[in-house]
Length: 619
Image 1 (cartoon, rainbow, N blue to C red):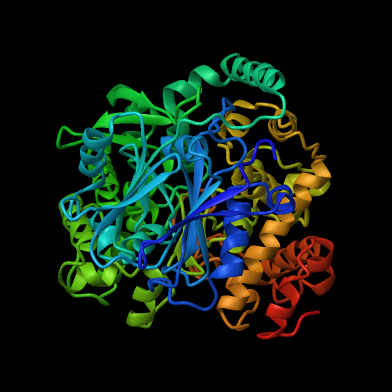
Image 2: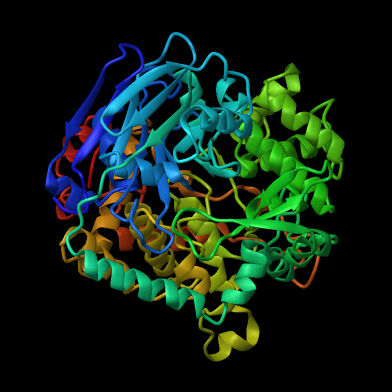
């Protein structure tokens, strides 16, 4: 094979066994890499296990774009069965670990079992060691990475967990490079459950490529196109932070646990304020449009900001000072917690206290209280810290009130308040890991470019309508953002933010692998991965599955926006249901949201059918 090694490194922490598995070229071609490869592994090997047990497996998966000079191709997927949701969980991050894993001669690392004492894995090409991490256990992710670089040198890739992962916080993440995070649905907790503090990788091999000259030519063209794009200068200034102003103007900014879409102090936490505070910029490997804007927080320490963490730790908590928001963000990164789920979990506590359901906890706008709770969550300290470490779904279940619990399938909602955005609500409802924006950021299209025709245009803005085209658009974006980019594995931002032509991606893939993929092939691969992930959910829930699993939070149906021209507006459940049915129709899934037999056969997933028929009937 060219472009793929066809090799998976396996490390069993229970037995200490290290082995290399070769996998067939047909699997590489069908699943491409990254999320595709991870999904294939988990479907085959992780069945009906406790996510925090030694039987769960943690997959670090790269794709054909990694380790090579491809546009923003420095990503890696981290996947496992989720301790937060009980279903499929993954996330990607930009990290030198993806470069080094590929250069070490592997497409993926699978960690199995559980160590008796804290360890870290050191990989240097074919030499793999399981080493003691007892001196690192308890340290934050920043200090852990610095210590490991002192030992192994700066030219390595490092993935680590902080105290949150060690203490099995259900939304603990894996961190790299002091602020890059992966695995919102608790991949850090899975790592902690295995007593695995870190993975350190050093690779020196040359990745086999089908056409080096063509790869070099196409990459150079793409990099130049990014630099010359009209939107590049503003992107360099603000990155994703520009979304604070944009969402606030469109009543989509999460405010005080998503009670409203407009924050009165948005100007104090937006991209312009960040510009005045910025001290440096960071990017992922092979990226020439870095999005990591670093500021000094209220405690004088560096914090790398982007839109999601500012929205969920800022306006969503009622905190309107960017240096305070930055401190909460840094604490989350150091402790190894997902900033989004942390923000929503703290905001749930704040509102629960406001409603009289909890006796203790911070109030909206209370930075010091939020900071204290963040540390308490990371260490599972005290009754409240331990309670909030479980995530919103479990907190709501314990309180007996899920009317203000902002999650889908157990994963907290990210930074787009969707009272008046049915398309974005559908994107959250059908995301493969729970309420995440990454796979179908349809709200940008819904607000900015959706067509408005005829009499309808005079009566109502398009964003509030339930046109079936919105379901089509969600699927289209999932095929690209949650499919193509997650399999390659590459960052979507050059295309989304700068307008880099999508045509570069199949051309680059051919130069790397020698395999010609049409767009129909790539969409089929994406649909294959989505269907397999959905099948995984259904199997792990023992067939207890229905369409309500794909509903957005109740708040968006039952309450209305609190202010502005859309005051009182909310989603219509009946119309949302119709949109969801259209989504299922396009995907070839039944009315419960389960892939039909003919769909699985068409996608080459025949092996899934007998497994699913053990737990449910298939149409």
